Image (tube, rainbow, N blue to C red; front, top):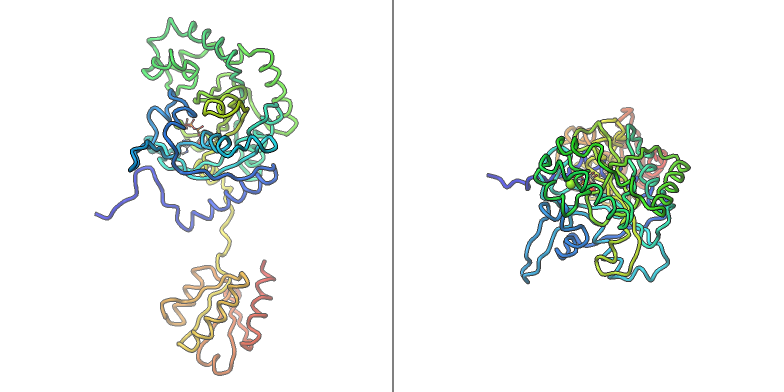
Length: 423
Ligand code: ATP
Ligand code: MG
């Protein structure tokens, strides 16, 4: 039996990879427009970072982590998300000593041991941003508007942007008490997970996908009901700014984030058309996190976006660009002498950034022309024995079927002209 890739992982092959590159390039352009810089952190970290930074009561830490002992008996974990890593890097590299806020973005694979299904993988990719060192509502609005702007640029529609405030630790303690009081008489109707959450993290019960739990919690006190004045003013200001940025949003008082360190603003973006796994982006403010992992008290806010799901949505909505022809020209050299001449022509053209290929299997003219067409080449550059004798190159336009002969010494100039006309 040939070896197969692990469950829940993917091979991204040519034909699909162009869509990824398009998405990644668009993301980088938008990040640049907003003044964000890229950060790259390790694929694995000390397990403790995620236990503390993501939170012991979360699904991620409780059941989804790829954790292993390295040969030095240290417990390591493949990153399941990147906020904790970025905060660690901020502290470890003393980025708090630089002008604040620090505005970072990242893109790359994350790992979670989950049940693979459509839109849910064990290795998946996230784009995310983190802003550290600023607590003003305008930061929250900037972050959400970046997401909105990216989706506009990609042409995504049918979006639902949900925003809420989960408050500060003071509001949350109040809410937690009210929520527990509300749920106490109906505790045994909850699912097993939620019964466990009741003591440790009752807020998460509002987030449970189980229909029975959802029925039990409909009408439960929301985080909105217990916001202190400061959190409430902050939230109102975020909403005003979102309006000014043209973001179409909905306040969803039931929206809570599964992670322990979130404070104040929380948000999520959904696209219903991609099925059950409809959340394409989730984020919020986490003013307590940097301190939690041993840094100075530092406010932070960010989000993470699932790229597989964004691509699925773009696919459904027919928003992925047509693939451009990949190859400008195919060099067809027949015989060793022609190959020598052609090979040197090829390296001159390639050095100028013009994409040209040549046959690597010593095939016939007919087969090579077929291959050139299949690769979407616009021109065939033909160098046979006759051409070589007369020091000529045959340039055939594969779309029009026309051809011209040029002296070999002028070939580079002529091809360059055609290339520049095309770009
Ligand atoms: P879900 O409720 O779908 O499990 P989550 O709350 O675990 O999502 P986050 O940790 O907030 O998700 O991650 C942010 C985004 O990353 C999600 O909105 C989703 O688009 C994407 N994502 C999360 N887990 C996966 C996965 N296993 N496969 C593909 N994408 C994922
Ligand atoms: Mg999850």
